[in-house]
Image (tube, rainbow, N blue to C red; front, side, top):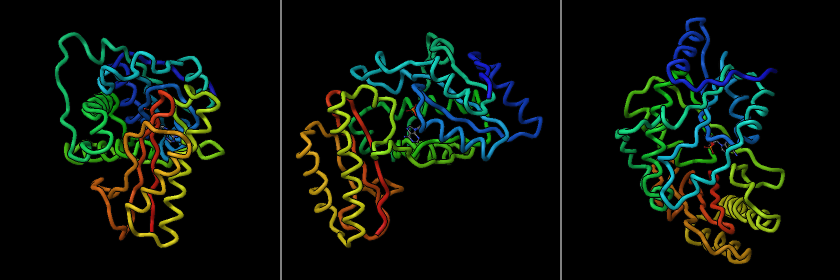
Length: 284
Ligand code: AMP
């Protein structure tokens, strides 16, 4: 494969996608913040399997970070991102400038749907307002046929799907499975911050999701009992900075106390100063 063209101009990006579609090609879009890993590449593969053209966007979106969060130190690894994408068929990489996305005086924001409120919404106020805003802007600049998102950011996929339905956006949303390291750790751009010791502690997230899945498969139906067992793994690993360990309805994210059907287990916790999230759908 070859190095994909880098486009930073929104109008040029839009023109290219429209030209591809005029050639009869379905266009797949993968929005990312860069620092790409095999999880991102799996979305590119899926797009290439389903579409005749694939566009990847790389933009560390300032409006989805709260003032105290890691926007400034979020990893920016454009050269290795380009190298990773050069192993796949990618028609273009859209890397917009901040000043083109949010020029001086920019003041329009999306009010995200209700499903944005619990969990991440409670611990990262304004996060989904920024996500919804940038995703809508990217969909307008990149009028693709399908956009691919990872289940790793479970609540984000619900927010984006609901926005697309509520606002009649002409794009299909496809949600792909979370890619994991061999030992189960969910791949994340932030994993690079973990020391070897923290890397081991971080396995508690996937281990506790596995435990929850095993408990449900074994007949446990009491949500509190499952959460208690998950919490005990975090206690044992010495992870104390936990935003949430929750069982929720897979569509509404309403808390689930008694398991009667599929339920999603979601976790956000800091290992050292690195905030990690993971989730798993549990089916009785
Ligand atoms: P990010 O660059 O972290 O904003 O993520 C860009 C896209 O990649 C989002 O749709 C994420 O859900 C997805 N993604 C991130 N990590 C993974 C993973 N481990 N497996 C699959 N998709 C992922």
